Length: 181
Image 1: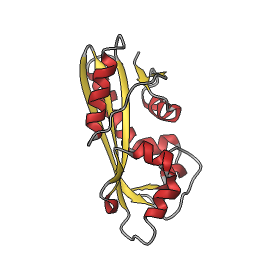
Image 2: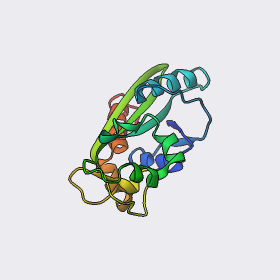
Image 3: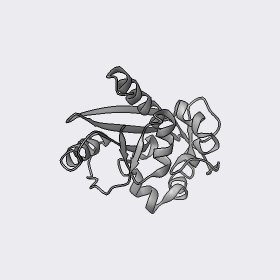
Image 4: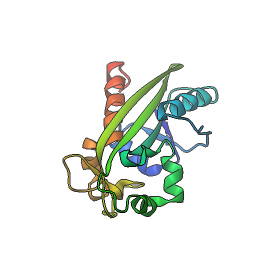
C-alpha cells in the first residue's frame, strides 16, 4: 500500500484510477523554488524521507508554454493561484503559436531509495477556457491530436494521454516489476 502525499484530491483521484490501492496522505511539506521539477521532487523526497516511515509517492507538474519561454513551468501552481486560466489566456492574446507541454514528475521513496517517473503531454493552449471536468489548467490545454481540452474529457480519457497518466503508468509498471502490486 503506497501513500500519495498531496493536498490535491483531484490529483489523487486521477492517480487512484490507475493504481487503486493508492492512499492519500494530506500533509504539509516545503516546496523549494528550483529550475526544474526534478529538483523540486528530489528535495521533497529527501525531506519527507527523513520524516516519514515507509514508502510514499509525491508528484509535481508544470505547464510549459513555449511562446512564453516555457512560463509558468516550475511556478505553475503559484501562477495558477495568482493569475488563473484567464490570466494565462490574457498573456497569450494575439499570439498564434500556442504550443505547450505539460510535464509531471512522480517521485517514489521505496525502501530508502528515490525513483522518478516522468510523463510529458504536448499540445496547445486554447483561445478560451472550455469544459467542466478536471482541475487547474485543464480547461485551457488541448493535447496533440485532440480538439477538446482536458476539462472536456472524462478522467479515464484524460489519463490515456495526459502527462500524469503517462507518469503514473510508468510507476505502475515499476511497482508490478518489483512485485509491489
